[in-house]
Length: 146
Image: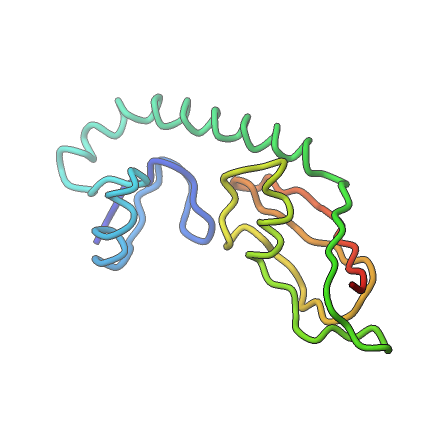
C-alpha cells in the first residue's frame, strides 16, 4: 500500500514522502496513529497544499527533539544491578530499563529509539538515544554492583 508520511519515521522515510508499506502496517499502525495517510488520487493532489502543514509539524518535532537532546546530551546515569566478583552481570541491560532510568527527564521515548550495545559487564557504557530524524543524544550509563 502506498502512503504519504505525515511525520519522519526511522527506517521508513521523511515527512511528506510517498512510501510503500505492508497493508497491515498501514491500516493498524500508521493511519490510526496519524503518522500517514493513504496515497490515493485526491490525497496526492492535495499533497502540495498539505506539504506546508507537514513541514511546520516537522519543524515543531525537530525543535522538540533538539530541546530533549540538550537535556540528555552528556548526562551520566547510574544503574545498580547484580554482578559476580569478576564484574560480569547476571543478566544484561535492555532498552526498557534505560527508558525507566531517563524517564525522570524525558517522557515520550520509544524502545526503538534506544541504541545500546550488549551490556554484560560493570563500568561506563555509551548509549545513543535517537530522538527524531538525524537528531540523537549520547548518554553515559555507569553500571555498578548492588
